[in-house]
Image 1 (cartoon, one colour):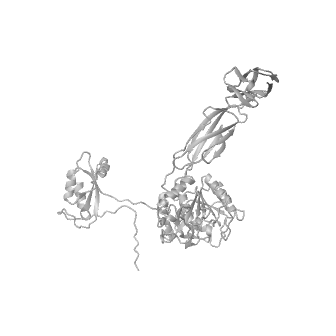
Image 2 (cartoon, rainbow, N blue to C red):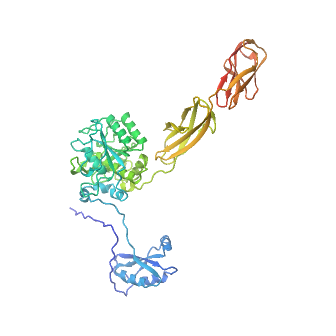
Image 3 (cartoon, one colour):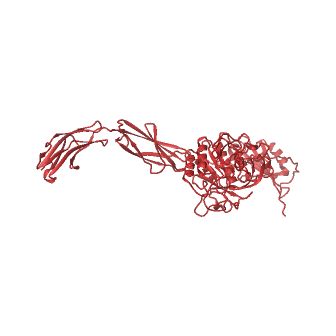
Amino acid sequence: MKKHVARRLIAGALSVGVVAAAAGTTTWANADETPVRLVIGLKSGADATASVQAASALGAKPTNLVAAAQEALAPLGARTLSVPASRQSLIISALRRDPDIAYVEVDQTAKAQDLKPNDPAYTSGDQPEVNKVRLPAAWQKTTGSAGVKIAVLDTGVDRVGDLTGAVAGGYNYWGMNGDTSDDSEDGHGTAVASLIAGRGNDGKGIAGGCWKCTIIPVKVLDGDGIGLYSDIAKGIVYATNVGAKIINMSLGGESSAKVLSDAVAYANSKGVLVVAAAGNDNSTKKFYPAAYPDVVGVGATARNSDARAYFSNYNKSGDSWVDLAAPGDVTVMTRSGAYESGWLGTSFASPIVAGAAGLIKSAHPDYNNWSLQRALIASGRKIASNGWTKYGMLDAGKAVTIGTDRIAPKISVPTPGYAALVHGKVTIKPKASDEWSGVKFVDLYVNGKWKARDSSAPYQFTYDSGVNNAKVTFLLKATDKAGNVGSSTRWVTADNIAPSVKITSGPKNNAKVKGKVTIKASAADRNGIRRVELLINGKVKATDTKAAYSLSFKAASQPKKMKVQIRAIDKAGNVKTTPVRNYKR
């Protein structure tokens, strides 16, 4: 058996030891001697050539000879030298005596400072999942925020151990009461919640993902872990309405349902991220709600490995619904407050992702569900046989650094035209686009009041101007998936008053006509007349656009019996028609 040698890196400044060295040779004392880098600062106007040559005679070698490196230090008046460790003290002393040298210092080292908790399960190595998804790197930026509420839709949550003070509110849709305690035999909901928000760095138990986040327990499963889709949908709506920004569902079924998909869509519309387990059937068959497009579906990896856990569902070619992987063989806190390792299932991979989402939300409070989802999937690290997930293994350390779309979408309103005269039902056709996250929906406001929303391009609205006869302002707002808003305003004048029109001369009613017949008319409207038409038996036979209006027809070309009218159309499109005159020929 090979002995495993653990290597531990200690963060902090490099300790410099001063070693006396004998002078008299310009060669390195040992070929494999580790060099030490020195930084020298030159006094203003000093030439470093002589100083460097003198140091070289003692065994120093100039470093960073690339022009880009030299140019970067030039404004600081600094140079770097590499010296044998055994001659470090001798060379430093010589350089400090040089009148052109302002300072000499050993080049220090820096290291990324991951925050590693003191919880026993972690320090003893029983939580390898924590390092696997780089939670310590994320904790360096944030350990969470109490204002970030994460709903756990499960068998309930017991407020014990590492969850003491972490749980608030909640509801029981199985019992239809406020008792959200976990009545499952194995404490499934409590275990899930502990992975999300188990208090870390408190010297006991485990370290959850988001130490300061708040858990909202929503009991939608009975003690056997069984629940109805309608109850789960209720839980999603409830969690959304009470302010949850992330919903974890370590549950699911093999069938989709409208009530469930609608509930997920409702949460998404309110900016809530939904995370769900991909299922434990070692299958490519879709598992819901994880398989819905706006849900982060999470598969499981084996313990301390990038390999897919034998039980985890996975993607098949051309059908990617499992988005991310996270460890599925983990250490949890049970409902009794005990800590146990070896808990298996995508049920425990999902809350690891949900906890990371809580850290992202804590670091970026303005992120909505799209921004959170993008940060998670953009962090995905490629893993062995990566095709079984769409984006790979969660990398929480990277996820908390991912930016989001900050550019507002573009929107214009070609129809109706600017300052148009309109009447009746008005069609509004905005054009909206977004080059990054994409347009999520367009809202119509009329005179400052919200009227309608369209979530599918091409966007179109109908406004009924009714009896309105005044200026109307349309405000169109396009919201992209990241929550940015672009707007455009278009005003029109509503005119729903019909014009006046009358015949001023022409054959009387029931007259017999022959030859060329001329009818003269007058028409008026406050916004102007577009045209006046002569109708015979309901068909337009002549048109005039200038007052005074004169319209003619040849009697011989018409039926023996004619119903004659004059119709006026104003510039808004309102119509008024004179009474019928019956003619014979």
